[in-house]
Amino acid sequence: MELETLHTPDADAAAEVQQVLAAASHHDLRSLRALLRTHSASVQDPQTGYTPLHAAIAGADPSQKKQQRNGVVNGDNVDAESSGEGNEAEAAVQTVKLLLQNGAIWNDLNKDDETPGCLALRLGLTNLYNIVVDAGVRAEILLNRLNEYEQLKDDDVEEPADLEAPTIHNTDSSSPPATSTAPSGAPENTTDSSATPDPQPNQPTYLSSSLSFHPDRILDASANSVMMSWETTLMSRTAALLAPSPGLRVLNIGHGMGIIDVEFQRTSPSTHHIVEAHPSVLARMREHGWYDKPNVVVHEGRWQDVLPRMIESEEDGDGGELNLFDAIYFDTFAEPYTALRTFFEDFVIGLLDEGGKWGFFNGLGADRQVCYDVYAKVVELDLFEAGFEVEWTSLEVPDLEERGEWEGVRRAYWRLKEYRLPVARFVG
Image (cartoon, rainbow, N blue to C red):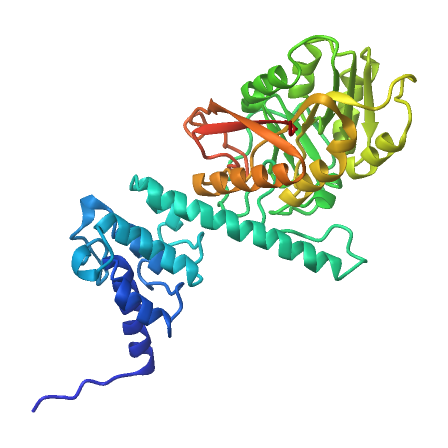
């Protein structure tokens, strides 16, 4: 006697998920449109973690057209002409766009720690990758604007936490610690280490934390890297582009190891202002003679407190000229992207002279290429809205993992092969 198949709600739901994934993988637009009327565009396969967006992109991989992945064929496209949607490549494009229009999340991770954009990049599907990047830009701009509206609802919150946006420099909330090995070599100067470790430091936590100074890095009490010497090549090129000739007026926000300030000094600026907030860094600057250097003015405190005073002041510390600069650089630690945007929207306009240039350490989303590309576009759009145009210079970054740079560092904050160096100036 034939037994009747037992259907359970869980089994039915799982089967429906597979239907959505299969339609996305096959670029079967007709079926997918019908399924999306009653199903989410962000369902996930429990075995692979694939979302429909992952499946649609994997289905466009020409080398894997017959690959079976846990019951979902990732690449066996339906006949494009019979589907009425044009050729296979166009069907893949339309499938990805359809999913994004129906709420597919651009940066969902599968079990291989890949976003749909990571997958498209690995498979060499440039067109689909660019569509995902553009979707990420739209999503991040919308998220940033929504966060602004939320801030307006509470006048008592001066600096609300922004855990979703990437930090400007050196923290990475999505990557595991690179290693638990202690740094090699004794630190040159270590302050009290009694502070409670914080795996995701914000600025108040950072400013109250102890720091250890090593020849090649500064670490906080939780082994987060504040700055590292491998950045010297990037800083040197940045200084050369921002301040290429002697006698310029320079402002740097965030001294850290002093890498870019040393580079600025090589061109003998007429005045060189440095804003630094961490007490341990300030103490080290005093030990190393920065307070005594000709034409150097050290401003102690957070840039949010120092810069308004500089803009409001009629004369600089030497007495004479207004606080206007030919070159400005911004490189802070444990601050979200919203801090950078506040900096160029509210302060650069009052500090940069006509014809001047400014830049920042571009570590936004540097734990994976798709996030880096998304935030490059986000910042470019925000800069233009604020009245700036930006020029990017690409610099090769060596394999830092292979060189052992992340030994003793809680998180590898840079995982990319190329650094995009920004130089911005007023539009026109």
